[in-house]
Amino acid sequence: MGYVRIVNASSSDLAPMAGPGRIVLLTTSHRVAPGLLSWPAWQALRAADAVLCADGAHPQLPYLREAGIAVAQASPAAQELVDACAGGRTVVVVATGEGEPALTDGLARLAGSGRVAMPELELLPASYDLPGARLLDLVQVMDRIRVECPWSSRQTHEGLAKYGIEEAYELVEAIEAGDREELREELGDVLLQVVFHSRIAEEHPDAPFSVDDVAGGIVAKLVHRHPHVFGDEKAETPEDVKEHWLRTKAEEKRRTSVTEGVPLGQPGLALAAKLASRARTAGLDVPLPRGEGVGYELLALAVRAEAAGVDPEAALRAVARVYRDAIRQAEGTAPEQG
Image (cartoon, rainbow, N blue to C red):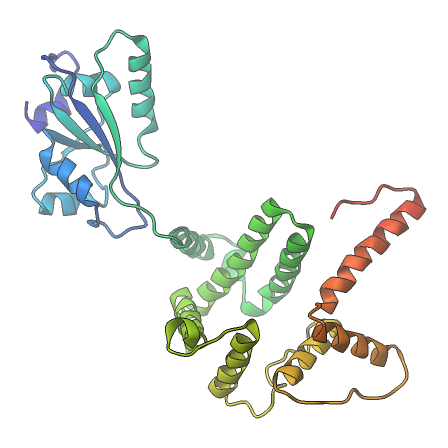
């Protein structure tokens, strides 16, 4: 039985012979470069009596044909496919989309009827997504949104800045609440900000960069700042790692002070704790400024918290939630969870 006959035949033309045969449903990932198939997949393709694919534009087809695999464009119904396997034949179906659910549902119904000798059915992944592969989908979706969405196409770095701050705070809130589903969602929102800004940056007339440049930069930074992982240096404690991180960071940015690079726009308690951390890590014994007022008291508390390994911002937020619940109880309303 030739390939053309399979494509054009009806179920009546494919008269069953002895033996139920075998159906191999070959699934591939569009996130992997076409042609990069597993060895079992190539074995199945070369040993098949027929190879079918419903999508004539499937990205794997040029590479299969280049390798000498004859592929017929066909979208057989379940019964037609069963008939094509008669006589012990093996038919490989190169899946499209989400794995041919209509075909597999039809085969399941035939098998459940008990009236058909069913071929052996094998689901064979021909290629797998690598960790992080769905990030490619995000980049592609962002590309399209940037071009076609009336709102997204007009956004700028400056206009989006406030959303970056909001999403970061919402992420922290999800972490502190211990809500795993909320955490996953908020991480996605923060990731969107990175991809969105990177997409906008591609359009800069003088200094464009892409999300690949962003990723490449942070990879190089992480490798350089972790010589105890990627090099020959040793780090026995978290403090050793932090000290080396700050030292290499200062060398990279040619900073003359440990206070350089500390954003002054962050919340006050976090700012005080960060400055105290920089001073302590650098081995500087800096007396606290003396004065009257709440600011001096808060500074002293923040420095004391940092020395004890406590995040003063997180500690204050936790107590603030307790205070919020007390207010609600005084109002006669039920306290919120988290």
